[in-house]
Each structure stands twice: as structure tokens, then as C-alpha cells.
Image (tube, rainbow, N blue to C red; front, side, top):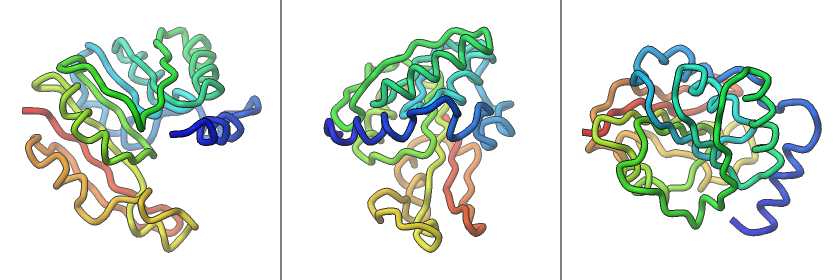
Length: 186
């Protein structure tokens, strides 16, 4: 991402309100029984931190990564409000390398950078869990999104076909359209 992208995201997250709310994504909340019992977690493109804070509340040591310092500051405020600890890390995800076998849990919601798929695979420990959910191609019917920002049918299944797939869904319910994956690294 460029400086222009950083400025765009900082502007988007400016203001006191939480644009996506303070509650975790529904998929994470309803499927939280599949989470490992603590350990280290990475929230990629964490935004305002709602999923990071949820994971921290379950006992994970969470690193929240995002390009927007404004969003990360709000994530830290939310963590303080909920009395949990997260580590915020301002990172350009387009040009990042993640450490090997570092995390027990990786979260990625509403963000797609296909070059990160190998990095996600590398950074999860064996037995680690991936929760991934983002817009799919059906979303183009409801928005002016760019095609490169949406998943093709079954793309997450193919991208992580060497993982054990625990849950998978593709949703197309006007105005929402997304794909969701929970998988364990073998």
C-alpha cells in the first residue's frame, strides 16, 4: 500500500464512532468454539480492533496489524475499554513478511491481498487455526468494488487446500456477499 492508501484508511477511520461497531464479526463469534485454547493470535488488517479484542477476551495474546494508525489507536481504546491487552502494529500489509510458525490463530476479515496467503500459511504453527472472511464475487452485484478485491467461488478452499477445512460458507444475500473459512494447518 502507498502513503495515499494509508491516508485513505486514516480518513475512513477518523471520528469517534466505530464504523464496524465494537462487537466481533458474527462468523468469529458464532464459531468461537473452534478456537484453540489460547496462545498467540494475529489479526491481519485489524481495523478498529473488534476481532482482536474478542480474541484477547478469550485469553489470546493478540497482535493487531493494520496500515491505519487511526484505526489502531481506536483498537487500543476498545481494548482498554474492555480491559484486555492487545499489541498494535502499524504495517503495510502489501510489503510485509510474517514470522514463521509464530501464531496459534490468524484472523483476517474484510481484507484481501492474495500475496499474503503464503505468509499466512507460513506464520501459523502446525495445528494453528485460520479464520478468514471477506467479500466474494457476488458482492459486485451490490457495490462498486473492484473485481481484484473479491474472492472467486471456492477460492479460499483452493488457497488453503493443504489445511484441514473445519467450516466453509459462501453467502449471497443482498446486500451481503462473502466467503468464510475456518481451517487448521496440518
